[in-house]
Image (cartoon, rainbow, N blue to C red; front, side, top):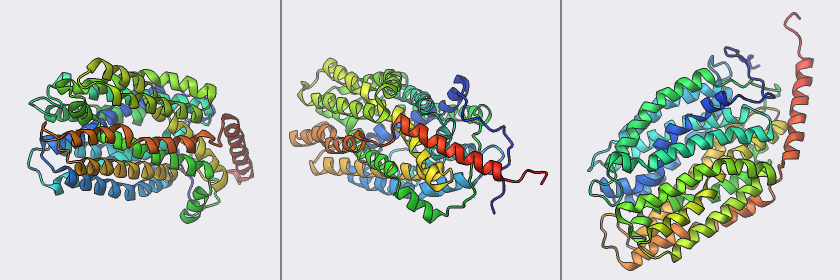
Length: 469
């Protein structure tokens, strides 16, 4: 029989509207996460493929192996987070705080790597980097899902997180201006990577303090039915809404990973923007930050899933316009990326909010709060998608004969880069839209689910003997 969780921190009332300060304290860790993670998403392949000199086919296998290893770790972190109910600081915050030093070690070893390091070095420290990321993000996502039961408040929570995320991404994208260097410059990406690494290493301890002391701890609700892990997997698999959002996430992120792996190289080699090749990316991320409050409002008005579909379609159309942009046209490139960026923040703003609604349905059916486990499967799907997408992008580029270590790529290689960046993600985006279009959990259904969950919790509480008995 499971022991009752120890309440070292006052239990948070999930029916109350969280304060802006507590939400800011919750969301702010997304800032150093983004500062550290954007180089991995956008700069890792040009940094190791260019500055460090790793062959891109070898790099493709390294990144695939590191991501697959990370996928296997996800459910373990999720289960441990769900079961650590007696942690004095809270079961979610415990793993976040443990993950921060692991993440910091990975940041240092990756972002301060020297030319000539072996493939084993790259593989080892990318695995450590991803381990720290997993230890933080899975319980972090579960904590956000548990801070409120309300359909609209959950979008507010994820909106704060997305705002800090895109602020961090913006800082990371303007890093070449602040640090010197960048794609297409004589210094390369080394100053950028080291500058971003230093900033994130300074910011993470501050984030740990704010999370630890100013974010309320949600109560641990458990009906006591003791659904075992394998039965729980069957419950999750029978949850049609969960499988649909998982499928939409996986296929959508495969497309996004293909796109991200080629971003810097596309503007450097295909568009011929030289040292200005990072500017369209900065513009994209700036408009993405501006788009966060827009998608919070639109998601409330027309439903979260329809808003995500609309945003994805608009981004596909605007990205496609880059095919017709003349080479060297910096203004048009920035204008197109600004339009695409407005839709780019929708998935980060609304996707996690939809996931929180799906967790309610799982809690109703499984009779347990298993946010950590299900978000671990969510993360597994996303990371598998990142691995597959990045691997496909690098292998396709290699098959066209593209090399990031020379500006003298053949026209076929540059055309292959354009196809990889713009066209290859389309089938994955369209399939993701189809999966989301008629998503079954609306605002009204989510409210009914929460009423049933809360009603059952009250009945169980009423049936339990009082301490005096």
